[in-house]
Each structure stands twice: as structure tokens, then as C-alpha cells.
Image (cartoon, rainbow, N blue to C red; front, side, top):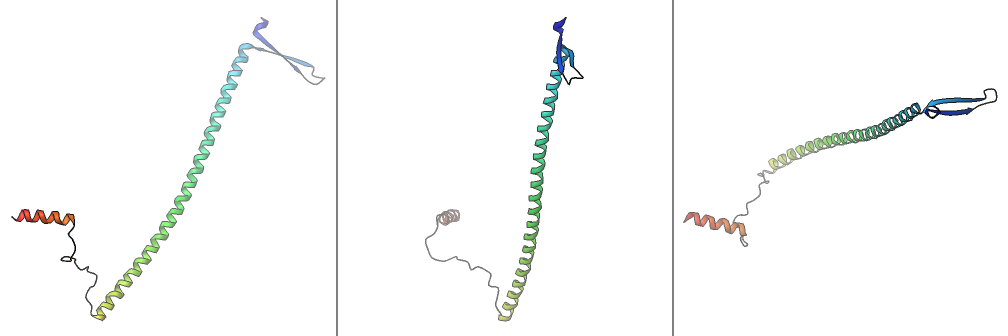
Length: 135
């Protein structure tokens, strides 16, 4: 019957003397298993909390970067609008100068058809196709 119990002696101060605690071995095993389970559970929740904090930190960094990028996009947008306004003013000045100087539109690129030089390979192929189709 003594094998079923575990005796623990607790030495205290003089007035309390020695105390004896008897615990069943089965109860001690259950307590050890419960403590191990509790330790694993606490470890799991601590690790999960640390991962959550890391993700929250990363999310806050991304939000901050997004806010910076939005402000930069807004800045670029206003600069583009200003450039478009300046370009419109330059076109208007160009039109006025051309009107005053009585010039036609000079923006057209003259065609280079009939200019000298050896024909390119693609042009030779098109010429052959056209001559074969004509005959």
C-alpha cells in the first residue's frame, strides 16, 4: 500500500516543524501531464502572439509605404497637370507666331520616297510580290 503513495517532507520554521504530504502516484502523473500540457499551450500562444506582432509590424510598414507612394503619385499628377498647361500655352504661342509669320504647319514630316540608296531586303521582297501580282 505504501507503493501507491509518494511521501514529501516539507521542512519549515521551528514553530511549524516538519510537514508530511502524501500524494498518490497516479495523481502526481496526472499533475505532471497537466503541467506539461499547460506549458505547451502557453508556448503555442506566446509563439502565435509573436508572429501576430511581426505581421502587424509588417502591415504598418506597408501602410506607411503606401501612404508615401500615394503622396508621390499626387505630386507627380500635379506636376503633369502643370506641364500640360505649359505645353498648351506653348502650342498657343506657336500657333500665334505661325499666324503672324504667315507660315503653314511645319509639323508634317516630309516623305522620303524616291530618295537614293540601296533598297532594303524587305522592300525587295515587296517589289517582287507586286511585280508577280501585276503580270
